[in-house]
Amino acid sequence: EVDWFSLASILFLLMFAPLIVYYFIMSCDQYQCSLITPLVDLLLGNTHLSDIWNKTPALTYKAAGIYILWVTFQVILYVFIPDFCHKFLPGYVGGIQEGAVTPAGVVNKYEINGLQAWIITHVLWFANACYFHCFSPTIIFDNWIPLLWCANILGYVVSTFAMLKGYFFPTNAKDCKFTGNFFYDYMMGIEFNPRIGKWFDFKLFFNGRPGIVAWTLINLSYAAKQQKLYGQVTNSMILVNVLQGIYVLDFFWNEAWYLKTIDICHDHFGWYLGWGDCVWLPYLYTLQGLYLVYHPVQLGTANAVGILILGLVGYYIFRVTNHQKDLFRRTNGNCKIWGRKPEYIECSYTSVDGTKYYSKLMTSGFWGWARHFNYTGDLMGSLAYCLTCGFAHILPYFYIVYMAILLTHRCIRDEHRCFSKYGKDWKRYTTKVPYRLIPGMF
Ligand code: NDP
Image 1 (cartoon, rainbow, N blue to C red):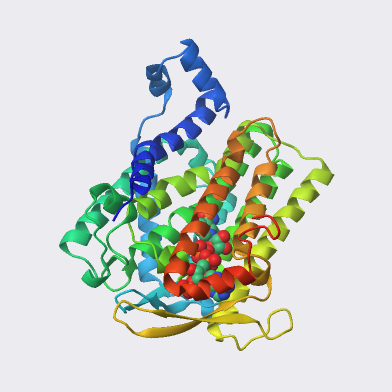
Image 2 (cartoon, rainbow, N blue to C red):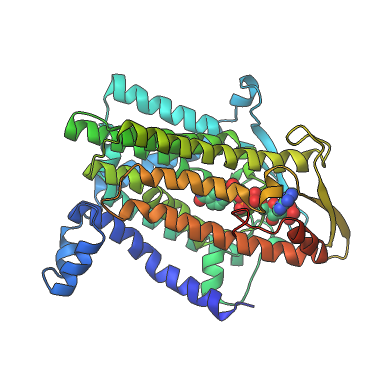
Protein backbone atom coordinates (compact mmCIF):
# COMPACT_ATOMS: atom_id res chain seq x y z
CA GLU A 1 0.00 0.00 0.00
CA VAL A 2 1.22 3.48 -0.83
CA ASP A 3 0.84 5.92 2.07
CA TRP A 4 -0.23 9.49 1.38
CA PHE A 5 3.19 10.95 2.28
CA SER A 6 5.00 8.74 -0.26
CA LEU A 7 2.40 9.56 -2.88
CA ALA A 8 2.61 13.32 -2.22
CA SER A 9 6.46 13.17 -2.41
CA ILE A 10 6.30 11.23 -5.64
CA LEU A 11 3.85 13.63 -7.26
CA PHE A 12 5.98 16.55 -6.10
CA LEU A 13 9.14 15.04 -7.59
CA LEU A 14 7.48 14.03 -10.85
CA MET A 15 6.19 17.57 -11.32
CA PHE A 16 9.06 19.60 -9.95
CA ALA A 17 12.34 17.66 -10.33
CA PRO A 18 12.66 18.47 -14.08
CA LEU A 19 11.83 22.12 -13.30
CA ILE A 20 14.43 22.24 -10.52
CA VAL A 21 17.13 20.99 -12.91
CA TYR A 22 16.03 23.51 -15.56
CA TYR A 23 15.98 26.34 -13.02
CA PHE A 24 19.54 25.65 -11.82
CA ILE A 25 21.01 25.37 -15.30
CA MET A 26 19.06 28.35 -16.62
CA SER A 27 20.11 30.51 -13.68
CA CYS A 28 23.76 29.89 -14.58
CA ASP A 29 23.13 30.50 -18.27
CA GLN A 30 21.10 33.69 -17.85
CA TYR A 31 21.79 34.97 -14.30
CA GLN A 32 25.43 34.12 -13.55
CA CYS A 33 24.35 31.25 -11.26
CA SER A 34 22.22 33.44 -8.99
CA LEU A 35 19.22 31.47 -7.78
CA ILE A 36 17.53 34.50 -6.24
CA THR A 37 17.73 37.07 -9.08
CA PRO A 38 15.40 35.26 -11.53
CA LEU A 39 12.77 34.94 -8.79
CA VAL A 40 13.12 38.59 -7.76
CA ASP A 41 12.96 39.68 -11.42
CA LEU A 42 9.84 37.62 -11.95
CA LEU A 43 8.16 38.91 -8.79
CA LEU A 44 8.96 42.56 -9.60
CA GLY A 45 7.76 42.11 -13.16
CA ASN A 46 11.20 42.95 -14.61
CA THR A 47 11.02 39.75 -16.59
CA HIS A 48 8.39 37.23 -17.59
CA LEU A 49 8.50 33.46 -17.78
CA SER A 50 8.22 33.79 -21.56
CA ASP A 51 11.34 36.03 -21.66
CA ILE A 52 13.34 33.41 -19.76
CA TRP A 53 12.01 30.62 -21.93
CA ASN A 54 12.71 32.55 -25.16
CA LYS A 55 16.34 33.03 -24.13
CA THR A 56 16.76 29.31 -23.38
CA PRO A 57 18.70 27.46 -26.10
CA ALA A 58 16.50 24.95 -27.93
CA LEU A 59 17.21 21.35 -28.83
CA THR A 60 19.59 21.27 -31.80
CA TYR A 61 20.51 18.62 -34.34
CA LYS A 62 24.11 18.96 -33.19
CA ALA A 63 23.25 18.18 -29.56
CA ALA A 64 20.98 15.31 -30.60
CA GLY A 65 23.84 13.89 -32.72
CA ILE A 66 26.36 14.22 -29.86
CA TYR A 67 23.97 12.60 -27.39
CA ILE A 68 23.01 9.69 -29.64
CA LEU A 69 26.68 9.04 -30.39
CA TRP A 70 27.54 9.22 -26.70
CA VAL A 71 24.86 6.80 -25.51
CA THR A 72 25.47 4.41 -28.43
CA PHE A 73 29.19 4.41 -27.67
CA GLN A 74 28.53 3.60 -24.01
CA VAL A 75 26.11 0.80 -24.98
CA ILE A 76 28.79 -0.69 -27.27
CA LEU A 77 31.42 -0.51 -24.52
CA TYR A 78 29.00 -2.06 -22.04
CA VAL A 79 27.58 -4.87 -24.14
CA PHE A 80 30.24 -5.81 -26.66
CA ILE A 81 33.62 -5.40 -24.99
CA PRO A 82 34.21 -8.00 -22.26
CA ASP A 83 36.35 -6.77 -19.40
CA PHE A 84 40.09 -7.12 -19.78
CA CYS A 85 41.13 -4.85 -16.88
CA HIS A 86 40.78 -7.64 -14.27
CA LYS A 87 43.36 -9.65 -16.21
CA PHE A 88 46.19 -7.23 -15.50
CA LEU A 89 45.09 -4.94 -12.64
CA PRO A 90 45.93 -6.62 -9.30
CA GLY A 91 43.06 -6.44 -6.81
CA TYR A 92 40.49 -5.30 -9.35
CA VAL A 93 37.33 -7.44 -9.53
CA GLY A 94 35.87 -7.29 -13.03
CA GLY A 95 34.49 -9.62 -15.68
CA ILE A 96 31.47 -11.77 -14.99
CA GLN A 97 30.19 -11.34 -11.42
CA GLU A 98 27.06 -12.38 -9.57
CA GLY A 99 24.59 -9.99 -7.97
CA ALA A 100 22.68 -10.60 -4.73
CA VAL A 101 19.78 -13.05 -4.53
CA THR A 102 16.57 -11.29 -5.59
CA PRO A 103 13.34 -11.71 -3.57
CA ALA A 104 12.24 -14.33 -6.12
CA GLY A 105 15.48 -16.23 -5.57
CA VAL A 106 17.20 -15.26 -8.85
CA VAL A 107 20.95 -14.59 -8.96
CA ASN A 108 21.78 -12.37 -11.93
CA LYS A 109 25.13 -12.36 -13.66
CA TYR A 110 26.70 -9.04 -14.68
CA GLU A 111 29.58 -8.16 -16.97
CA ILE A 112 31.60 -5.74 -14.84
CA ASN A 113 33.47 -3.60 -17.36
CA GLY A 114 32.78 -0.06 -16.16
CA LEU A 115 36.39 0.75 -15.35
CA GLN A 116 37.37 -0.29 -18.85
CA ALA A 117 34.57 1.85 -20.37
CA TRP A 118 35.75 4.81 -18.27
CA ILE A 119 39.40 4.35 -19.27
CA ILE A 120 38.67 3.94 -23.00
CA THR A 121 36.36 6.96 -23.01
CA HIS A 122 38.89 9.17 -21.21
CA VAL A 123 41.85 8.01 -23.30
CA LEU A 124 39.86 8.95 -26.41
CA TRP A 125 38.90 12.27 -24.84
CA PHE A 126 42.53 13.19 -24.08
CA ALA A 127 43.72 11.87 -27.46
CA ASN A 128 41.23 14.20 -29.12
CA ALA A 129 42.09 17.16 -26.88
CA CYS A 130 45.85 16.76 -27.39
CA TYR A 131 46.25 15.35 -30.92
CA PHE A 132 43.21 14.82 -33.12
CA HIS A 133 41.19 17.97 -32.41
CA CYS A 134 38.03 16.50 -33.98
CA PHE A 135 35.93 18.49 -31.50
CA SER A 136 36.59 21.13 -28.87
CA PRO A 137 37.06 19.93 -25.26
CA THR A 138 34.47 22.58 -24.35
CA ILE A 139 31.86 20.75 -26.43
CA ILE A 140 29.84 19.62 -23.41
CA PHE A 141 29.70 23.06 -21.83
CA ASP A 142 28.93 24.69 -25.20
CA ASN A 143 25.91 22.43 -25.76
CA TRP A 144 24.87 22.05 -22.13
CA ILE A 145 21.21 23.15 -22.41
CA PRO A 146 20.46 21.48 -25.78
CA LEU A 147 21.96 18.32 -24.26
CA LEU A 148 19.63 18.72 -21.29
CA TRP A 149 16.64 18.24 -23.62
CA CYS A 150 18.23 15.09 -25.06
CA ALA A 151 18.92 13.69 -21.58
CA ASN A 152 15.31 14.37 -20.59
CA ILE A 153 13.98 12.62 -23.68
CA LEU A 154 16.09 9.55 -22.92
CA GLY A 155 15.13 9.64 -19.23
CA TYR A 156 11.40 9.70 -19.99
CA VAL A 157 11.63 7.17 -22.84
CA VAL A 158 13.56 4.66 -20.74
CA SER A 159 11.28 5.04 -17.68
CA THR A 160 8.13 4.67 -19.79
CA PHE A 161 9.59 1.71 -21.63
CA ALA A 162 10.54 0.09 -18.30
CA MET A 163 6.98 0.48 -17.04
CA LEU A 164 5.42 -1.01 -20.18
CA LYS A 165 7.98 -3.77 -20.13
CA GLY A 166 7.05 -4.57 -16.53
CA TYR A 167 3.42 -5.06 -17.60
CA PHE A 168 3.86 -6.80 -20.93
CA PHE A 169 7.18 -8.61 -21.11
CA PRO A 170 9.04 -8.60 -17.78
CA THR A 171 12.43 -10.24 -17.53
CA ASN A 172 11.38 -11.98 -14.34
CA ALA A 173 7.67 -11.75 -13.55
CA LYS A 174 8.14 -13.01 -9.97
CA ASP A 175 10.38 -10.05 -9.15
CA CYS A 176 7.84 -7.45 -10.31
CA LYS A 177 6.12 -5.19 -7.79
CA PHE A 178 2.68 -3.71 -8.57
CA THR A 179 1.20 -1.39 -5.98
CA GLY A 180 -1.83 -0.53 -8.11
CA ASN A 181 -0.90 3.14 -7.92
CA PHE A 182 0.14 4.36 -11.36
CA PHE A 183 2.35 7.22 -10.16
CA TYR A 184 4.12 5.13 -7.54
CA ASP A 185 4.77 2.32 -10.00
CA TYR A 186 6.03 4.75 -12.64
CA MET A 187 8.33 6.50 -10.18
CA MET A 188 9.67 3.59 -8.13
CA GLY A 189 9.52 0.98 -10.88
CA ILE A 190 7.83 -2.35 -11.42
CA GLU A 191 10.62 -4.63 -12.55
CA PHE A 192 13.48 -5.40 -10.23
CA ASN A 193 16.14 -6.13 -12.83
CA PRO A 194 14.81 -5.34 -16.31
CA ARG A 195 17.06 -6.67 -19.04
CA ILE A 196 17.22 -6.88 -22.79
CA GLY A 197 18.91 -10.06 -23.88
CA LYS A 198 21.26 -11.78 -21.51
CA TRP A 199 23.56 -8.90 -20.63
CA PHE A 200 21.92 -5.50 -21.11
CA ASP A 201 20.89 -4.75 -17.53
CA PHE A 202 18.99 -1.44 -17.27
CA LYS A 203 19.90 -0.75 -13.67
CA LEU A 204 23.62 -1.29 -14.02
CA PHE A 205 23.82 0.51 -17.37
CA PHE A 206 21.85 3.62 -16.46
CA ASN A 207 23.23 3.81 -12.93
CA GLY A 208 26.84 3.28 -13.95
CA ARG A 209 26.97 4.77 -17.46
CA PRO A 210 26.26 7.07 -19.27
CA GLY A 211 25.83 9.51 -16.35
CA ILE A 212 28.78 8.54 -14.16
CA VAL A 213 31.27 8.08 -17.02
CA ALA A 214 30.16 11.51 -18.22
CA TRP A 215 30.63 13.10 -14.77
CA THR A 216 34.43 13.40 -15.09
CA LEU A 217 34.20 14.41 -18.77
CA ILE A 218 31.73 17.16 -17.89
CA ASN A 219 34.18 18.48 -15.26
CA LEU A 220 37.03 18.35 -17.80
CA SER A 221 34.90 20.30 -20.24
CA TYR A 222 34.29 22.97 -17.57
CA ALA A 223 38.03 23.15 -16.89
CA ALA A 224 38.67 23.56 -20.64
CA LYS A 225 36.09 26.36 -20.76
CA GLN A 226 37.80 28.18 -17.88
CA GLN A 227 41.10 27.89 -19.72
CA LYS A 228 39.51 29.29 -22.87
CA LEU A 229 37.73 32.17 -21.13
CA TYR A 230 40.36 33.24 -18.59
CA GLY A 231 43.62 31.74 -19.86
CA GLN A 232 44.01 29.61 -16.73
CA VAL A 233 42.36 26.86 -14.72
CA THR A 234 41.81 27.87 -11.09
CA ASN A 235 42.91 25.70 -8.17
CA SER A 236 39.25 25.35 -7.12
CA MET A 237 38.42 23.82 -10.52
CA ILE A 238 41.39 21.46 -10.18
CA LEU A 239 40.17 20.45 -6.70
CA VAL A 240 36.66 19.73 -8.01
CA ASN A 241 38.10 17.67 -10.87
CA VAL A 242 40.44 15.73 -8.57
CA LEU A 243 38.02 15.06 -5.67
CA GLN A 244 35.08 14.11 -7.87
CA GLY A 245 37.45 12.17 -10.13
CA ILE A 246 38.52 10.05 -7.13
CA TYR A 247 34.86 9.41 -6.27
CA VAL A 248 34.02 8.35 -9.84
CA LEU A 249 37.11 6.14 -10.17
CA ASP A 250 36.31 4.56 -6.81
CA PHE A 251 32.84 3.75 -8.12
CA PHE A 252 34.26 1.96 -11.15
CA TRP A 253 37.04 0.24 -9.25
CA ASN A 254 34.39 -1.15 -6.89
CA GLU A 255 31.68 -1.79 -9.47
CA ALA A 256 31.38 -5.45 -8.41
CA TRP A 257 30.85 -4.33 -4.81
CA TYR A 258 28.23 -1.90 -6.07
CA LEU A 259 26.08 -4.92 -7.06
CA LYS A 260 25.53 -5.40 -3.32
CA THR A 261 24.38 -1.84 -2.57
CA ILE A 262 20.79 -0.71 -2.02
CA ASP A 263 20.37 0.64 -5.57
CA ILE A 264 20.96 -2.75 -7.12
CA CYS A 265 19.81 -5.02 -4.25
CA HIS A 266 16.55 -3.37 -3.27
CA ASP A 267 15.37 -0.63 -5.67
CA HIS A 268 13.16 -1.39 -8.65
CA PHE A 269 13.86 0.35 -11.95
CA GLY A 270 11.51 3.25 -12.64
CA TRP A 271 11.64 6.98 -13.27
CA TYR A 272 13.56 7.53 -10.01
CA LEU A 273 16.56 5.61 -11.39
CA GLY A 274 15.94 5.98 -15.15
CA TRP A 275 15.33 9.72 -15.34
CA GLY A 276 17.49 10.38 -12.28
CA ASP A 277 20.56 8.76 -13.84
CA CYS A 278 20.07 10.46 -17.20
CA VAL A 279 19.27 13.99 -15.98
CA TRP A 280 19.54 14.60 -12.25
CA LEU A 281 22.98 13.07 -11.76
CA PRO A 282 24.94 14.58 -14.68
CA TYR A 283 23.31 18.01 -14.33
CA LEU A 284 23.15 18.53 -10.58
CA TYR A 285 26.17 16.57 -9.37
CA THR A 286 28.38 18.75 -11.58
CA LEU A 287 27.08 22.15 -10.46
CA GLN A 288 30.35 23.16 -8.75
CA GLY A 289 32.33 22.93 -12.00
CA LEU A 290 29.61 24.81 -13.89
CA TYR A 291 29.57 27.52 -11.24
CA LEU A 292 33.36 27.89 -11.44
CA VAL A 293 33.13 28.60 -15.17
CA TYR A 294 30.99 31.66 -14.38
CA HIS A 295 32.83 32.56 -11.14
CA PRO A 296 36.45 31.41 -11.27
CA VAL A 297 37.54 31.14 -7.64
CA GLN A 298 41.28 31.11 -6.83
CA LEU A 299 41.57 29.75 -3.29
CA GLY A 300 44.29 30.77 -0.86
CA THR A 301 46.77 27.96 -0.18
CA ALA A 302 45.49 27.29 3.37
CA ASN A 303 41.88 27.06 2.19
CA ALA A 304 42.78 24.84 -0.75
CA VAL A 305 44.78 22.49 1.48
CA GLY A 306 42.01 22.46 4.11
CA ILE A 307 39.39 21.54 1.49
CA LEU A 308 41.66 18.89 0.01
CA ILE A 309 42.17 17.32 3.45
CA LEU A 310 38.41 17.39 4.20
CA GLY A 311 37.68 15.75 0.84
CA LEU A 312 40.37 13.09 1.26
CA VAL A 313 39.44 12.27 4.88
CA GLY A 314 35.77 12.04 3.81
CA TYR A 315 36.74 9.73 0.98
CA TYR A 316 38.90 7.62 3.32
CA ILE A 317 36.02 7.15 5.79
CA PHE A 318 33.58 6.39 2.97
CA ARG A 319 35.88 3.80 1.40
CA VAL A 320 37.14 2.13 4.59
CA THR A 321 33.64 1.85 6.07
CA ASN A 322 32.28 0.26 2.90
CA HIS A 323 35.31 -2.01 2.69
CA GLN A 324 34.96 -3.15 6.31
CA LYS A 325 31.37 -4.29 5.74
CA ASP A 326 32.23 -5.92 2.44
CA LEU A 327 35.17 -7.84 3.97
CA PHE A 328 33.10 -8.83 7.00
CA ARG A 329 30.22 -10.14 4.91
CA ARG A 330 32.44 -11.87 2.31
CA THR A 331 34.38 -13.78 4.96
CA ASN A 332 31.37 -14.33 7.20
CA GLY A 333 33.19 -12.52 10.00
CA ASN A 334 36.44 -14.49 9.63
CA CYS A 335 38.61 -11.46 9.08
CA LYS A 336 40.41 -8.74 10.98
CA ILE A 337 39.02 -5.23 11.42
CA TRP A 338 41.62 -2.78 12.69
CA GLY A 339 43.83 -5.73 13.60
CA ARG A 340 41.24 -7.59 15.68
CA LYS A 341 38.55 -10.21 15.15
CA PRO A 342 35.33 -8.27 14.52
CA GLU A 343 32.51 -8.16 17.04
CA TYR A 344 29.00 -8.69 15.76
CA ILE A 345 25.40 -9.49 16.58
CA GLU A 346 24.00 -12.76 15.31
CA CYS A 347 20.63 -12.24 13.69
CA SER A 348 18.05 -14.20 11.78
CA TYR A 349 15.18 -13.51 9.41
CA THR A 350 12.51 -15.51 7.63
CA SER A 351 11.89 -15.17 3.89
CA VAL A 352 8.44 -15.08 2.27
CA ASP A 353 8.48 -18.84 1.68
CA GLY A 354 9.10 -19.44 5.40
CA THR A 355 12.79 -20.40 5.20
CA LYS A 356 14.89 -19.17 8.11
CA TYR A 357 18.23 -17.50 7.31
CA TYR A 358 21.06 -16.30 9.53
CA SER A 359 23.12 -13.15 9.17
CA LYS A 360 25.51 -10.98 11.16
CA LEU A 361 25.59 -7.26 11.93
CA MET A 362 29.09 -6.00 12.66
CA THR A 363 29.68 -3.70 15.62
CA SER A 364 33.45 -3.24 15.13
CA GLY A 365 35.46 -0.69 13.16
CA PHE A 366 33.55 2.29 11.81
CA TRP A 367 30.35 0.20 12.08
CA GLY A 368 30.70 0.42 15.86
CA TRP A 369 30.96 4.24 15.70
CA ALA A 370 27.70 4.81 13.85
CA ARG A 371 25.24 2.73 11.84
CA HIS A 372 25.93 4.58 8.58
CA PHE A 373 29.40 6.06 8.92
CA ASN A 374 29.92 5.45 5.18
CA TYR A 375 27.25 8.11 4.56
CA THR A 376 29.08 10.47 6.94
CA GLY A 377 32.26 10.12 4.88
CA ASP A 378 30.26 10.70 1.70
CA LEU A 379 28.80 13.87 3.20
CA MET A 380 32.25 15.19 4.19
CA GLY A 381 33.44 14.70 0.61
CA SER A 382 30.31 16.40 -0.73
CA LEU A 383 30.88 19.39 1.54
CA ALA A 384 34.47 19.67 0.29
CA TYR A 385 33.28 19.95 -3.35
CA CYS A 386 30.92 22.77 -2.39
CA LEU A 387 33.49 24.68 -0.33
CA THR A 388 35.78 25.00 -3.37
CA CYS A 389 33.28 27.56 -4.72
CA GLY A 390 33.56 30.04 -1.83
CA PHE A 391 30.51 31.68 -0.29
CA ALA A 392 29.30 34.21 -2.88
CA HIS A 393 26.33 32.11 -4.06
CA ILE A 394 24.16 29.32 -2.70
CA LEU A 395 23.91 27.36 -5.96
CA PRO A 396 27.05 25.23 -5.45
CA TYR A 397 25.77 24.25 -1.98
CA PHE A 398 22.77 22.51 -3.47
CA TYR A 399 24.82 19.31 -3.61
CA ILE A 400 25.52 19.04 0.12
CA VAL A 401 21.91 19.91 0.99
CA TYR A 402 20.65 17.33 -1.48
CA MET A 403 23.09 14.63 -0.31
CA ALA A 404 22.18 15.31 3.34
CA ILE A 405 18.48 14.82 2.51
CA LEU A 406 19.13 11.82 0.25
CA LEU A 407 21.38 9.98 2.68
CA THR A 408 19.29 10.77 5.79
CA HIS A 409 16.19 9.55 3.98
CA ARG A 410 18.10 6.51 2.75
CA CYS A 411 19.31 5.84 6.27
CA ILE A 412 15.73 5.91 7.62
CA ARG A 413 14.43 3.83 4.69
CA ASP A 414 17.19 1.25 5.15
CA GLU A 415 16.67 1.04 8.92
CA HIS A 416 12.95 0.58 8.43
CA ARG A 417 13.72 -2.30 6.06
CA CYS A 418 16.31 -3.82 8.41
CA PHE A 419 13.89 -3.60 11.33
CA SER A 420 11.21 -5.43 9.29
CA LYS A 421 13.84 -7.99 8.32
CA TYR A 422 15.63 -8.63 11.62
CA GLY A 423 13.02 -7.52 14.21
CA LYS A 424 14.34 -7.81 17.79
CA ASP A 425 17.89 -8.53 16.55
CA TRP A 426 17.92 -5.12 14.86
CA LYS A 427 16.80 -3.58 18.17
CA ARG A 428 19.77 -5.25 19.92
CA TYR A 429 22.04 -3.81 17.23
CA THR A 430 20.67 -0.27 17.55
CA THR A 431 21.06 -0.46 21.33
CA LYS A 432 24.72 -1.41 20.90
CA VAL A 433 25.33 1.20 18.14
CA PRO A 434 22.88 3.97 19.05
CA TYR A 435 23.89 6.66 16.52
CA ARG A 436 23.12 6.82 12.82
CA LEU A 437 25.54 9.27 11.26
CA ILE A 438 27.42 11.32 13.85
CA PRO A 439 28.62 9.54 17.02
CA GLY A 440 27.18 11.22 20.10
CA MET A 441 24.80 13.44 18.11
CA PHE A 442 22.54 11.77 15.56
P1 NDP B 1 25.09 0.42 2.93
O1 NDP B 1 26.33 0.03 2.21
O2 NDP B 1 25.27 1.09 4.25
O3 NDP B 1 24.23 -0.90 3.10
C1 NDP B 1 23.15 -1.02 4.00
C2 NDP B 1 22.91 -2.51 4.21
O4 NDP B 1 24.05 -3.11 4.83
C3 NDP B 1 21.74 -2.79 5.13
O5 NDP B 1 20.54 -2.82 4.41
C4 NDP B 1 22.10 -4.17 5.67
O6 NDP B 1 21.80 -5.12 4.64
C5 NDP B 1 23.62 -4.12 5.76
N1 NDP B 1 24.11 -3.69 7.06
C6 NDP B 1 23.67 -2.65 7.81
N2 NDP B 1 24.37 -2.54 8.95
C7 NDP B 1 25.30 -3.53 8.92
C8 NDP B 1 26.31 -3.96 9.83
N3 NDP B 1 26.52 -3.34 10.97
N4 NDP B 1 27.07 -5.02 9.48
C9 NDP B 1 26.88 -5.67 8.31
N5 NDP B 1 25.92 -5.31 7.42
C10 NDP B 1 25.15 -4.26 7.72
O7 NDP B 1 24.14 1.38 2.09
P2 NDP B 1 24.05 1.82 0.55
O8 NDP B 1 23.97 0.65 -0.32
O9 NDP B 1 22.94 2.82 0.53
O10 NDP B 1 25.36 2.68 0.31
C11 NDP B 1 26.57 2.25 -0.26
C12 NDP B 1 27.46 3.47 -0.47
O11 NDP B 1 27.01 4.24 -1.59
C13 NDP B 1 27.49 4.42 0.72
O12 NDP B 1 28.82 4.72 1.02
C14 NDP B 1 26.77 5.67 0.23
O13 NDP B 1 27.35 6.82 0.83
C15 NDP B 1 26.96 5.60 -1.27
N6 NDP B 1 25.85 6.25 -1.99
C16 NDP B 1 26.10 7.34 -2.79
C17 NDP B 1 25.07 7.96 -3.48
C18 NDP B 1 25.32 9.14 -4.36
O14 NDP B 1 24.40 9.58 -5.03
N7 NDP B 1 26.52 9.69 -4.38
C19 NDP B 1 23.69 7.46 -3.41
C20 NDP B 1 23.56 6.31 -2.55
C21 NDP B 1 24.59 5.73 -1.88
P3 NDP B 1 21.46 -6.67 4.92
O15 NDP B 1 20.01 -6.80 4.56
O16 NDP B 1 22.36 -7.41 3.98
O17 NDP B 1 21.73 -6.98 6.35
